[in-house]
Image 1 (cartoon, rainbow, N blue to C red):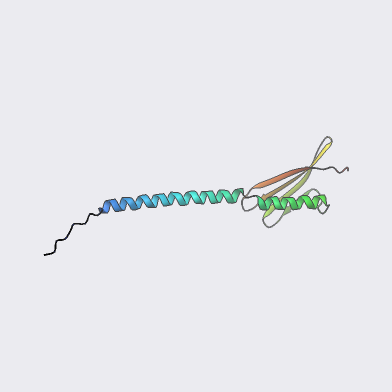
Image 2 (tube, rainbow, N blue to C red):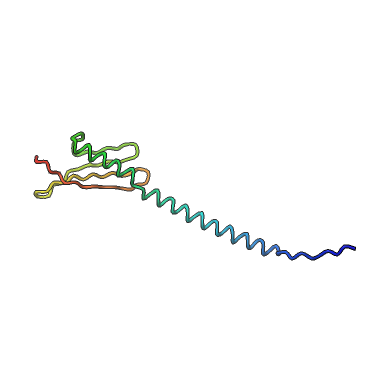
Length: 113
């Protein structure tokens, strides 16, 4: 005669609760990672800074005239000259259409008009 040993196992309620806890932890982790990725993409200004450097170069080499407004594929570009008494500044402003972030830079204009 074969004697069957009783195997200890979890009840159905314990398995369901453990599954729910694991799903909740993964859901929170996915939401957190998604938020981190979106913030990283929003704060990435390398492309805007590169475009800004290109515009400053073009201005210094007199390839663009002021005031300058342009609506390119991914960028809204605005360049203007501001004069305060003896100081003249050129303001470069570029806004990304995708992320709606704005990067600006001011340089001093040493040219005499």
